[in-house]
Picture 1 (cartoon, rainbow, N blue to C red):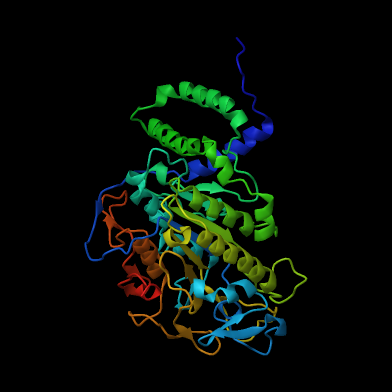
Picture 2 (picture 1 turned 90 degrees about the vertical axis):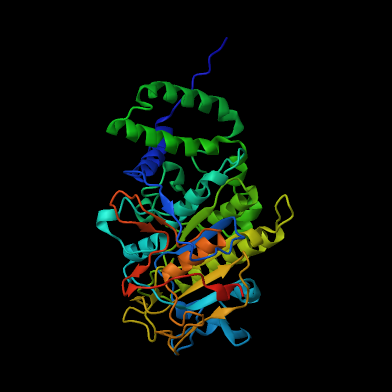
Length: 462
């Protein structure tokens, strides 16, 4: 009898250790799971997955989906009226301009933050950073994962919450929620390290068995150290899901998809690969409920129209245009086992952490941070395409028409409540037995301006 002895190279050790360390850093300090519903709202439901594309760095609203023509606007932006008075930069977003009837645009967004890290946190957590509660507060992805834990099926082999191309320092984790709600962070530029070809399955099982035997003495030990090991074991269990042979197909990018979605490969991200993976995850229907994708950086403080720069308004618009259009097309053309189109059960949200300064360019020929006006794009899961909600003034400096029933600007909390609603979750719920003793509201009711009633943007669906 020949015993198969697994080999672990130095490169594999560093790679796997890095992923484990990243996941471990997101583990919660304490547990809390006493959830109370306020019974004030009725979730819309209908979606089984949310794909949240974060335009990290903050896009220029007047150069994308709230286009405004100024003397410095390049002629080759080719701004045209598409339908019903909606103007789009056809020169940089030709595919999305042709598909205006497939997505809705919000032009009455306002944001609470104008600092990247704080704004990025706000978009994921739905509230301002509180240093005392930093390890307690979960992201919306973790909350959705938590809400769907009891609905997981025997054959689900994907984690409920996946992040693609999001740096660990910018990713809001599971906070006080169980490790099973931890985001599985993956880099779409490479094949995920946990995805195993069938030929390596036997080796993986030997390693997993060895690990379990080595740390068996810590299991069930009610000490601080024992709790840490138990939590880490839960995180490993999430990683083990990806050892299913079917996972390799989900995270493998075929040559024809690379060609269709583009092969632009910035230092920061690869949107094409991430969108292909998100599409494959939707098609697999294997337990994932929330995917956050980072696309950046849109932080163009200088040379915004300079095509010689790696990152400029042209390159970012072009990549988003290609990838988002293909993602929508593919989800429209694909169906699940019951014959339901994937686009009808998948909500797509595209948004940044704030907008950019309006009017003339700054002295460096770019745009700076601006929180009083911005954009969001939503598609799928019942969103009525071709719809534009709200309007800004002639320079995209401030909101002059909210365009929805609350008659005020739309804030990140309203986007969060809408995602919860479409995913069938009561956004008025709160967790009461938190580590800090302060209730955690799924959608925070205390804004930087004081108490506010946030809610679903029903005009997207009516």
